[in-house]
Each structure stands twice: as C-alpha cells, then as structure tokens.
Image 1: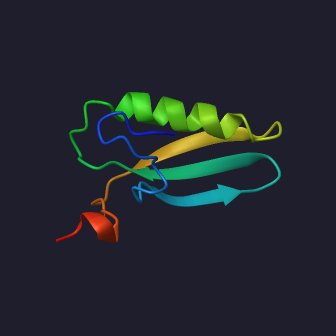
Image 2: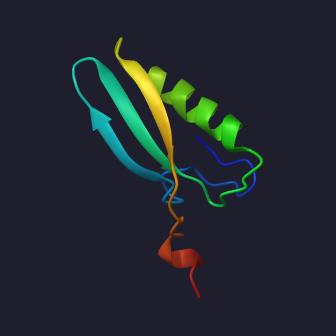
Length: 77
C-alpha cells in the first residue's frame, strides 16, 4: 500500500512495526509518520483492505501505535 503523501509503500517507510498472525486473526501494528497525520483513517483502511486480500478468512485488525516513526536510513541525514 502506497502512502499517498510520500509516494512509497508503508513497508519501505518502516510504518509497519509488527504483524501478528494466528489461526483466527491478523493484527498489523502501524506507526504513522506524524501523530497528526490527516490521512490516518485512510492509511488504516487501506492497510486493512490489502491485508484482507491475503487473510484467508482471518479477521484483520490494524492498530495505530502511539510511538515515534523511525524513517528508513535513506531518509536520515
């Protein structure tokens, strides 16, 4: 799923902190690039939608974590 403001996918942007999978559900832990991100709802819905495509009948939950985002190395100066 591509972040519409930055133009890169959420995995390459280090926005996916963790994914927990068991027989009944998948929990994706998402870190936003800014705590006031105006697209937070959109990002959560899109990550959930994409995860449901591969969930094989499992429930999907996307949790937004209240922690600072760590940009990928190539964005650090």
